[in-house]
Length: 168
Image (cartoon, rainbow, N blue to C red; front, side, top):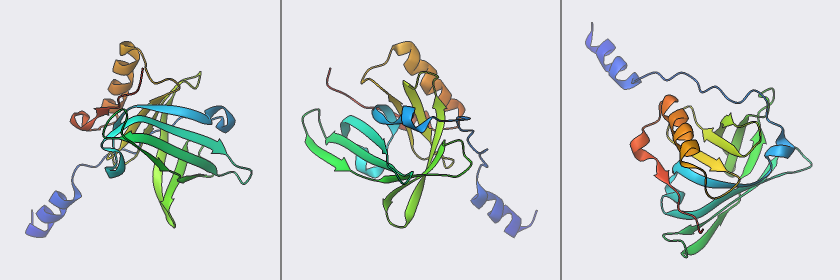
């Protein structure tokens, strides 16, 4: 093996298979509040408490999103972000581009959605961030184990997963 081939192989790293998304998402049913139960967080949410992601389907087909949390503690300073979701055509509504800053759209994949629309996993092919969310701030331990197992099976580094505390 040549030196160039060795360097290129090392730089390429482990190839991850693309994440399979939910087959079909009923957008009106998906809208509303989702409590972040656990996440491999982005830089803005590493100290989040009471994290809630709210979605509203706008007339133009985009998703008005409001992400709120308390920073640093259950009663910490309230932070609010308002990205916009853009549903990818022909994705069964399960792939979005989430835009915090124009013109950049971050990949947003609905990798898991239960049939009652009460629990979901939002993932990314890069396996850098993930969110386990539910319609209520608490889920059963069995459900938590099932969802974290799903995330682990996607190839995420589970040592980075953080449970998000919520008021009772």
